[in-house]
Length: 305
Image (cartoon, rainbow, N blue to C red):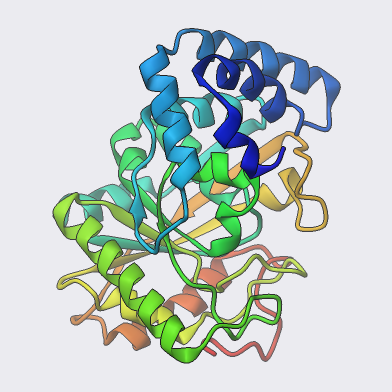
């Protein structure tokens, strides 16, 4: 489904096409049929005004370097859709995230395996009894997230802030240094405002892109600017496992239902535990060591690039 079709839909048509479109991503026919039935029942209860609001959200998503709040219907859609994608889950160390978020501004740093990482993280934290925390998650999203219909729908179901893709990544579009600096400043200010004004919890994938070989890569050193954007930030290290098997880098058009494991570790605090760049380097080591061998950084991988 092409993004341009959004301009041709009304509330009734969106409710008709969404269940079939989203359930078609399941590789397993049984899971696909169950998911379609689940979503059809969900969207049938949406009022026209709610559905039109979601349609409007999807239509403008990603146009500017700013923060986009989750659409309420989209949020329920995402978590309902994930019921058939995630067959089992666990989340260790959520008490570290809760304690940090109760105390002040928080940033989460996590390894990046799949386009499904953000959606899975939101769903599992909500299902673990911490919907209040899940609702406050703010995911940094690169330009590519908003350019594909499936990923745009997923983004509309979450709080996202559009961030520029690093020019260090070979597969990204080239932009002038002036434009990159302007975009980065806009994103940084939007994220900082979200953390201070709305108490959002910013989740960053500091590798800048999904791993291509399964092993965690270096962190982009520019990420440290987010860590110093607000006074008193606690930085919580996190690992995600299993999403690469559900939605792989090689075939991100299909979902193979499976298990998800999230793990949260005690935070480091910018200032008391080091400057922002020092914290970023330390947590590269801590996150890498907490991963299973097939996801740990390869020997010789620098912490920051």
